[in-house]
Amino acid sequence: MLLLAQSSLCGVGDTLRALRAAGLKTSVAARRREPFGPVMRSRTADLLARGAIRPGQDDEELVVIRADHTRPRR
Image (cartoon, rainbow, N blue to C red; front, side, top):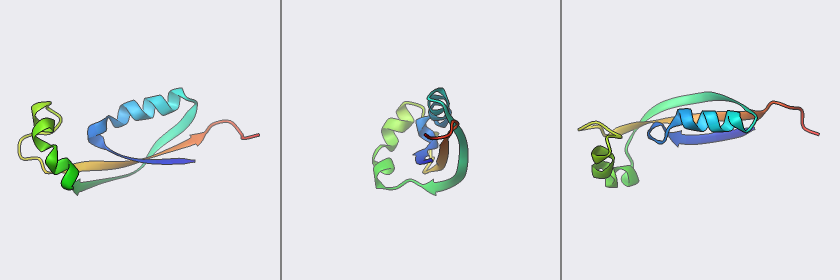
């Protein structure tokens, strides 16, 4: 089993598709909105310029993805 935490700003759908393409069964195990930490705050201008966040946005959704083998392990 793999548990992967990532920001929704990083393309959760792309991650799910990549894991499924690798033969893993995936699900979103948890979602939670959190205020930007120091790293995200330092990148706000760039994220805004790229259209990744809206003006005034100061939070993001964090997602935990679960991925499991679909075949029995040997």
